[in-house]
Length: 71
Image (cartoon, one colour):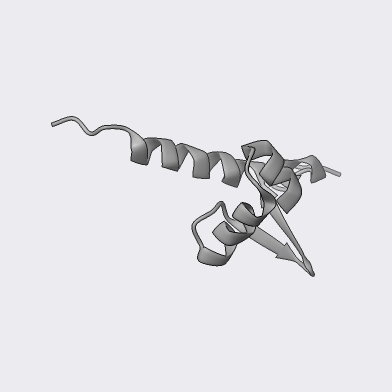
């Protein structure tokens, strides 16, 4: 059963899927995770998964940081 509090399985990305989604190499995603600069990942046993909402929020934060500030 899927509720609004529980993400559906399709709401999670593997490291490989995240790399494809962002069009970057898999080692880049792994480096971001290691350095703490990438989207928040969740460890499920030996596997790391990324919530799409966390990835999209991370992208939005980077877009905001790159916008010129009004003087």
